[in-house]
Length: 219
Image (cartoon, rainbow, N blue to C red):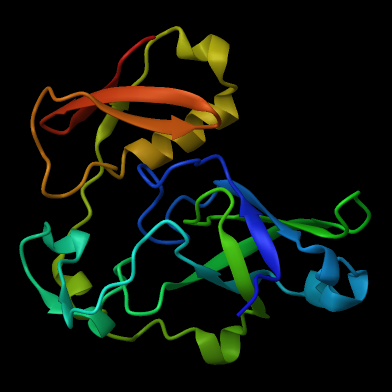
């Protein structure tokens, strides 16, 4: 399969990316098509939809041939069948994300560009396909969520240094807070006072966690 587009996002590495699409609702990203698909005709009618499905490739992960994996939501200690999880380590490196269309730029030097919100996708990721989200068939609000129904997602309190007010706008800080409060650390690494680092918008963010408080370390 050949990519039909590539994704542009604030994340240039895997660390810190939200573990599911839609949980950081204001996180911005862009879909830029490859030259073959830069025709407005290819997305004609998409402006009438609120959400799309993105099928994409885990381009930075190795494929696995094991039948079980350790989902991060279970702390990395319990194994589940690979096809009963959304683990990024899979026999075929295909990801699936539901994102909201923010706007469509129809006339750019790169053809139409789709701006989306809520993606869990790294910068430069190849996109294999795009499909519209259909509420009447894709939404199942009463469906069981398997082992994820057992897990409570406790958010952290995030403390920024005062210097961050000069580096980021208020809107950018709110998005960064939404990302960090979900605790981007690997679930098997919860060491108090250890310094972790992530890249966001080409800037390095360093932080430590003590209990339920995440403190961003000033540069």
